[in-house]
Image (cartoon, rainbow, N blue to C red; front, top):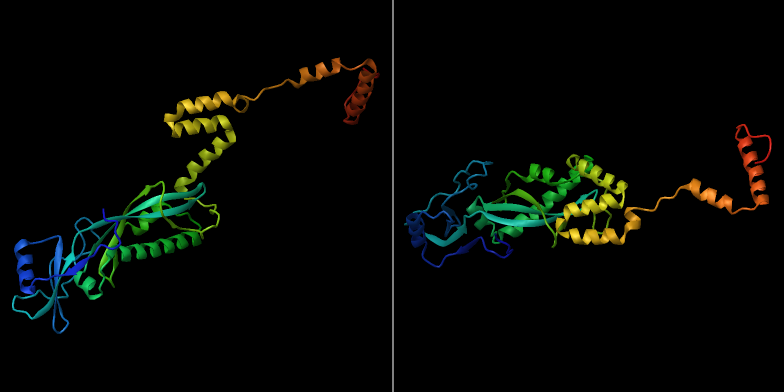
Length: 294
């Protein structure tokens, strides 16, 4: 996997152009293409144009640049990288649970070597990375306008098919979205420092309801959920349960027994006064009461 923004897509050869033509024809190279330029600024091409096998999005491009001949008056010869590259872009997606960090796995390649040389596009991943960031921001804004969340299904649906950058001769597509842990990431859906919006995709609603129920169920459910996600921490969970019995099993009291105990400590005069207050209160509620004090 290439992770260098400075990796060059093409370089000018030192050998005579006619030798480069013979070298390409004899080797039947598939990992590089040959672009030549003559004294009048015209371009000539040997190699394969279009997309790698398996992408299936576009047909090969028409050969706009003619094939070179051994007797041509060429001033420059360029070898252009014809391999498929894979890089990742870290992205932070806003969800109802907080920010979810993912890696977008991106495949990119040169579909038009002549265009790459014409535009002096030396560093391909930098160009692809910049365009991908713009496409992701546009997708996030479109999802926000539609009132929908932005997650892996939406990204794959929009960016899973190859996108051609015609002005530079490059193409790319996102072929996978995976959870990540740390590192630099692109924030989508909200400004830096802004709180995460209350949004989710339809596919995440069940997870939200599950977490909500776990919170309502109290510490017991949360401890069980933690153990489910971290089965290697059984000892730590058991130690926590022993040290926090008051949270897991709060003491229960019988109010009738407590009240009877309290009445037993009152004097006769205090019990008499309390009986009159209780009789008046019951009478005010419309309930029948004994004729005398208790």
